[in-house]
Image (cartoon, rainbow, N blue to C red):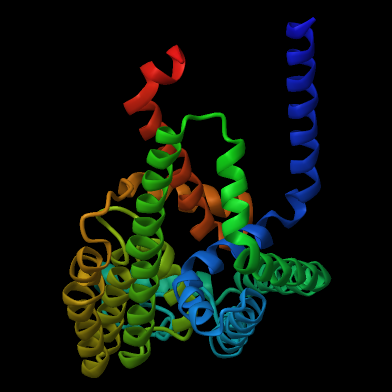
Length: 345
């Protein structure tokens, strides 16, 4: 009878767990985004709460601060990226030549051929349809986006106010010994810290610097869009932001060479030097100071987490994916160290 009750309880528990997940699944992006925001700003919240000694007021102030930052970001950066979607085409070294390269070299002929394809009305129509579909999907998703923002607001506020109580409750119901819970907490804190501050924040800094370089050297009509892509590229091991700035600088040099523009060539060379000496080396300079001796997650796992997160949760998955893997790795680390005692207890 006890065995029957035990299995019946487990069956109902997992059934309710699955149903609960299906209920919150539409809002998973907003909930996890709120968790990340709280994690990043929690040190500031803790200091504020020490002064006010009022978790409700401190939570409300932190929420307003985060919303102000998001509004500023949306106005200054997000609107720029959306407006640049209309300028994005197959940017390359031949776009400004209009098929007028007169040299007999194979390079020039190839440029003329490519320019002819890109200037074909059918190609322009394909690009226009693609941008139009993106714009329509953004407009259609506005009501859903408003609901996600509302869920984000409530999640962020209550995690600030009740986050410690929630974590304590989760720790109490976890079927692990106290020593294992302490070890799991430490592993998770180290991995989360190194992932958020050592990978995500550093990638965002690289993206900001790359965007500034694209503007300074006049490398593209869509610097904010390519800067956003640089943030994702920064998480790719070994290659990183070079995946964006290197082809762009080489294209700019090539375009200047074919069009006879010395200034354009020097701009491309300048972007290449800045990319090589600054953009791609920021992580080596900043990351050790931020992370220190904390255990970090392997770059391949960060990449897989970012790409898998995008597939699962759209753009916000860039940040959430690596954190989910970090939590999973924490469990694996605890299992590796304590597996014999866990299964024998």
